[in-house]
Image (cartoon, rainbow, N blue to C red; front, top):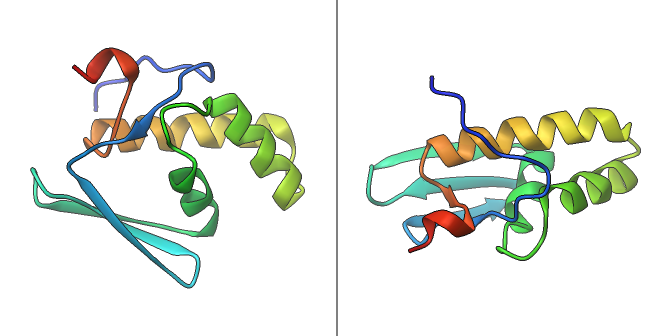
Length: 99
């Protein structure tokens, strides 16, 4: 898989082709263009819900660390990894990709 250049300063948003439903804290996200989907656990859903194009990945990592009592270094790494995966699946977009 190609590594995607993304940093904690980025402010990705949910892609227009992505639809999601959250049940019991777990999100299922479908890419309508590709016909693929991913399922996220509670912490992944926490990230997904905050991908609004205005909130940085750093801010999301800090909120995740505070809310779940996890070390910030761990949440930074995990948030970045998941965001890269979601980007490669076409489920999120960066400002430079919006048009």
